[in-house]
Length: 345
Image 1 (cartoon, helix red, strand yellow):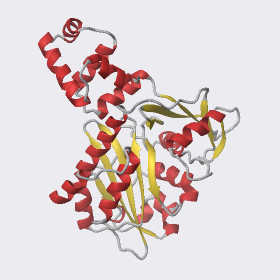
Image 2: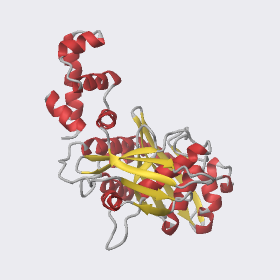
Image 3: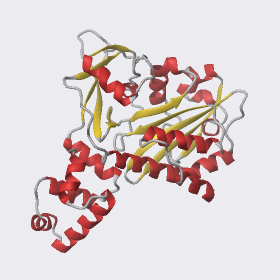
Image 4: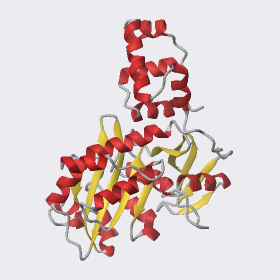
């Protein structure tokens, strides 16, 4: 198991970015654990809402339903898993019908078992992965679970690291102007969108050929809104996602209130992440301590070393020690460089 974890740590994607890395990691995982389908999503580390998917599932035409049921299912939900790996059959005592997503969708695709992994550390939740086995395959074994459990820590580190690295990319991409809004039905089917939305969606999940982009991120925040309303999970329906080249977007979902309409449509907004939200994510992705994040925020307000020491009731030497640690963790050398990258140039 230790060698398996070491092999995972040596995996790198062919191109920079989380999708290439995850595909390379899946190839390595498949050498040890067989699976027939998968869905791997990054998550906002604070809201734990999914975004930026890499998936190969047989029910892709029913993607809105799959995502809606995934968020509505309490069994092995990534937000409440007590262990980093959970097997559907083992968790339900051999009765997968206890799982809403299996009962209402996966059973029709002959899925015999699902292994769920959550990638969480003390800085937040960085993603979740579902591996499916389809008949005539056998269910996942205890040995499979032990292998997957052993590789979760290096996988978690890799996901957080690739998020951190994204802040250091050059911003050469233009962000579309105007409001970007997507309107979903209660079942998460697209009803309408503003012209600017298409450009965002194509950047988030580039389609192949002339196909329309799949608004997977919008489906996720919309599904989280429904899950929150139904009392399944209390996290807000919001997620920050890397658009590319250092640019971050925030997706938020809310009901469109209409008189006399019992089950209103859902509006999903896509907009550049605010400076404060971007800096918060930057701190988490780079593994800054709470005190280090406070110092960086104070630097962003223009507070000098003497002011920081007075504000935080510590010596100027201690402030300098914290700054050295921040520079080391973030790969920067000066306060100006640090803040330029954290806030976006």
